[in-house]
Amino acid sequence: MAEGDLVRRITSTTGDGIDSTTNSVNELGNAVDETARKASEADSLFNSYTMTIGGVSLATVAAVTSMRAFVDFAGGQSQALVDIAEHAELASMSTKEARLSM
Image 1: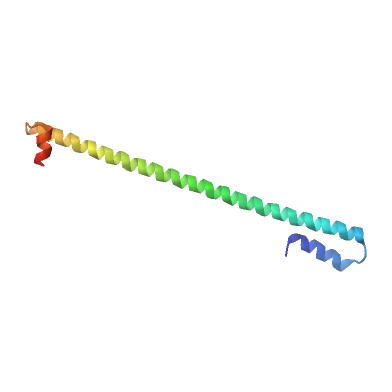
Image 2: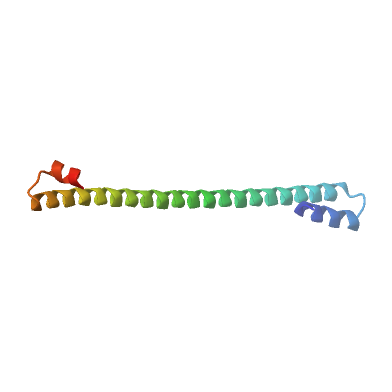
């Protein structure tokens, strides 16, 4: 039952034959229904915004995590190259010879 129906039901059970009052009450009932509908739309819009903000936040966290993983990977590769160069220097070899001997 819509909110405006409550207003209409109360009026229809308390009096007969007063057209202007009945019309006024019907208009009031329609206004109550419209207000309830708009409130429902506003609530739905708020929920949509909340979900959008949550989705953007989740995407940001995922982007930061993947960037961190990439930086860790690149750092690991750089460290491997430094290790090869250091071992080659210790062994008095070229970097290419040291890499091939591993």
